[in-house]
Length: 245
Image (cartoon, rainbow, N blue to C red; front, side):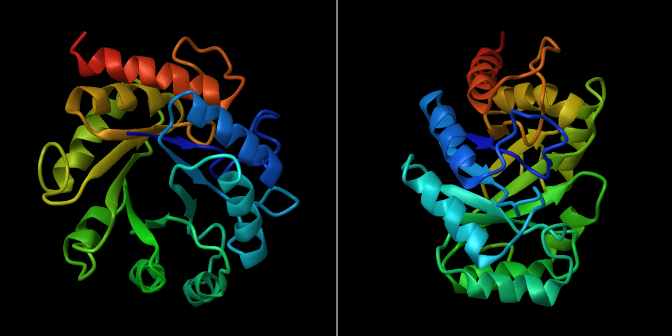
């Protein structure tokens, strides 16, 4: 499974090709799915390009994307979209259109309350476990650990020459070399670490993610022009390394 991360935490200043409006997100999602993406992860935005959990923004994005694709669509619940944990839970309870799943950064304050609010509404939870945080340790003792949809193993090491090592350490922290016992794992990297970690996911047979939210460049260093281009290259690399070449 290759999930496309349409825009992530990026703003309009990062690149003109990153989709920011609901219409642009939907168009980008449709092209990425046509290129082979099997899921969509998206950050709803304010008109200024900031992450938001507002019911209006979430509904607009989900309606637009679902009008173009039939694959599962997930959203973020990161603190940058709503810093106060109680307000984050309130936002989730106010949603009128529900995503298929939502990511919860387990190292953030209020993660369990946010996850519980999602589960109460029938929304799948991607437990985001980021390298360099105490997320893995907190998740290991969470009463919700058996209820999440999957673990989102997020390698934040941006260096191409060390990201794979960081990924191995993160996977081991999750309980075993290839992930967490009993829960599926989606492994992905960011920036310079995006491609080495994607190739590692291929070798390990784990689900992965790619898109403009994670990297703006192709493996050869050229700027990507679309999410679809990143998905096409990501699938090619994943399959090549999946077969050990």
